[in-house]
Length: 145
Image (cartoon, rainbow, N blue to C red):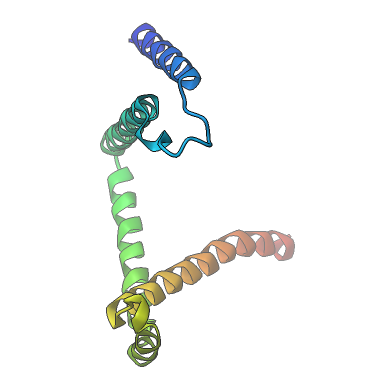
């Protein structure tokens, strides 16, 4: 199986290297319609799909093979869902309405502004949690000795 994968990667690499020489110049206004460019995008999409499928497959395989890991994963997903719910509750409807009205020419709606606020709140909460999880053990080591 490893030999097959190596041969496939070498073949894809050689095809991509050959296509590199057929690339249009940057000055060409019709460069986007180039066959070489389209084929390189197809190769990129295929490799991206392979990477995503392999990541999901092997992640699920390891998750289901190790006892207790599924429980830990569900706790993590549940914790993230709680953080998202709290963040959605914290994103204010009053402020979202004002921002949506001021940016109505850009197509912003109150729901969009509230979702953006929720995303920012999730980021800030997870950042605080990550910093706390890095700092607290260090402080414990300093003061417990």
